Each structure stands twice: as structure tokens, then as C-alpha cells.
Image 1 (cartoon, helix red, strand yellow):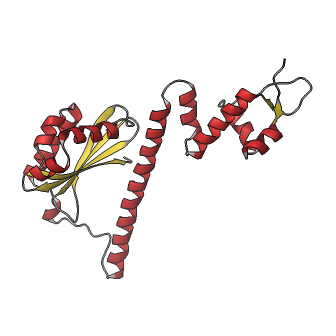
Image 2: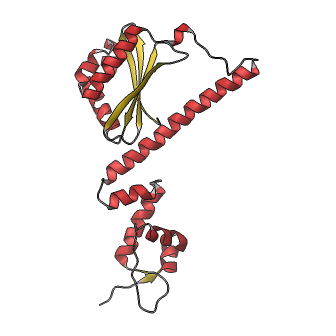
Length: 229
């Protein structure tokens, strides 16, 4: 017996979407309809409607069409797609937050009669060789996967707060959506807090900022933040 088919307007009413949306998804190849002789409107069977429901869920999560296409083509898995999209959103937030801070600083400078175009070449803005060397050595071990060596650079307090097993799990979870490593981009010190260094790493799908807080010659804090490079 033939499966029951519903036309596009009935499906739209059922799922709370629009016919324009479904036509667009079909043009992009992420859903399909059933051709029926002498019927001008698209028809959908139960399996196609269930698939549309899944696509609508993915779109509600903000996944772009290109990511859904990759998923359907078998080039990735659902967990990776969601993790990658989450990482991209976090990177966007971090990037915008940094821009907001820079804009606030510029407004403050202008309001106080300063010149935002003047270059600040204070010596304090240049990281010391020792900390720069430690940061680069730490990052090299991080990139090679030698997290035991990375852990040896931590202060005793940081080691107690972030045990080695937890550190390895955090690193694994953070790197999962990034793809293959591409290159080290730059190292810079914080303009206001001079015991803070940032190492910017480029991966296939996103950037990673490794923020290191120093206490003397040891790393007293570490943050791994997605970023746009």
C-alpha cells in the first residue's frame, strides 16, 4: 500500500516552518520531497517529514547549511559538528569582547584629552626573555602532546588546583573541534598586566589563545580560549 503523503503546506503547518524554507533546504540538498504525477506542490512521506524535523533541530542550534551538508556527506559526525560550532561562537564572543575593551579604552583616552593615535612603546610592554622563553618552551611541549612536561612548569598551587589528569582532559576537550595544527602565530604580553603572556596558535578550523599567568618563573594560571586569527 502506498505511504500517505502530505503536501508542503500541511507539513509547514505541522512543523511551524514555511514553504520557502523547505524549498530552500531542498535546493541545498539537505532534504528531499516525493514527486507525484499531476501534483504541482511538493509532497512528503513520513520518513522525509522526520528528516525535516531533524534538520529544523540542527538549524535551531544555529548550525549553518554547510555544516549540515558536511554531516550528511559523512565527512564528520554530529558531536564534532556541534563542538566546532560551539567553538566558533566562543571565539566570536572572545573577539568581540576584546574589541569592546579596546573601544572602551579609546573612549576613555579621548574623554581624558589623550591621543589614541600615539604609540605606547613603554619598555614594560615587552615580555622578559625568561618568561618569553618559558612560554615558548611550554607551548612547544603543548603542541607535541607532552603534557607531563607542560605540567612541570606549573606552580605547586596550580598543580593542586588542576591535577595532571584534569589538565589532560581539558586539553583534549579543547583541541577536539579545532582540526590539525597549522602554525604558531605570535606571542604577546598583556598591556596592563605584565606577568600575563598570550600564545596564539592557528589550527585548521579556528585559532587557540593560550593565556599564561606567571608567578616568578612558574606558570600560576592557564586559560585556553578559542579565538579568530
